[in-house]
Image (cartoon, rainbow, N blue to C red; front, side):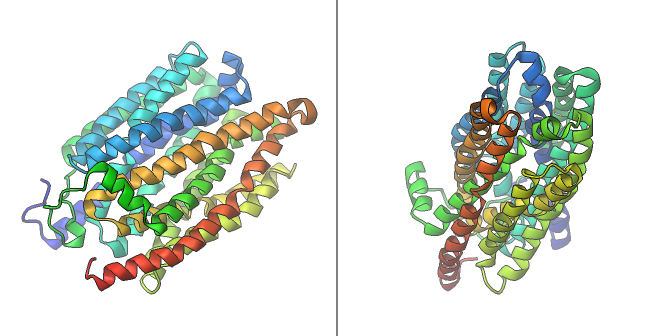
Length: 432
């Protein structure tokens, strides 16, 4: 039921929170299947005889290339077609690719499965973001999108716990297959219990607007300075967070002597609880403070990007394992301040029929720059410096990537002024 006919306020509220809950669980499955590779990297490296550069390509670059390319046409389809069905089909497909990862017999087969995973997962967030923005008004949107983003940390927590221990007792191949299976059930639950909302429902807009042609849509978004600065800020944040985050388990294993089970047990609550608290707090504060000054939607991400940097420098420099883990937990509370507010800000700039495309372009930038180059650069520096620094070459790579954090903060600060100007224009024109 695309328009929720006859739904009263109470029913609409119940529906919107149910949909948000299901989409958050779907996003959790997304990150279980994506991030389990992180905890399995060392075992895969030994089993298949890989270098750190190859691991960086596997975890970042190959995934990013397909995710970024597939995301835009899928988002364009989501701006025209049923978004719920697109997400359900995508979930079933990427679950199959995760299972196939466990059957890979060599590096190239694993790359192929990873690329298939990326193609499937490209159909998750842009349609989901668009649905959430149709269910929740702008004043609640950053909080709702932040709740959705909590799925990332539920997924990482489960991936670290399940992946770490299944790998330790049964091997990395079994871990991939086991975590893939629940995704098929979740796809059915999504397809048959979630309602597709009418476009513009939360904004009080009609659904008779057709999106402009693709090139015109991209041009419209790109010429908006606020959108460009949000893309840049998110890209720098993703470059640092993904580039370092994908290598934290190998770092703890090589330089602090922890096993995969120990790493999974320690990192799971840090990522799950810390990450969830971070992203929810950022969305809540943005909605609360943004009512008085819309610049807070980008100032909050700037604060997170700036103050997480010294914590990362510390935990990649220290040899005290306990203090390192405390610093990792502290950085986790700041790392994802950019997610919910940035997406909400982007959706506030565009019409309902352009929201999936806006999300996909945002994710295109942060995926290509962040996921594509962050892990690869760390791995390449680690390999290049191995003869000189030994195991510390990984530390050097991690510290190098960390230095991009303040650049993300600067982009958000500059973009905040442009965003406030755009929102004032919409308010003057009487657009919600």
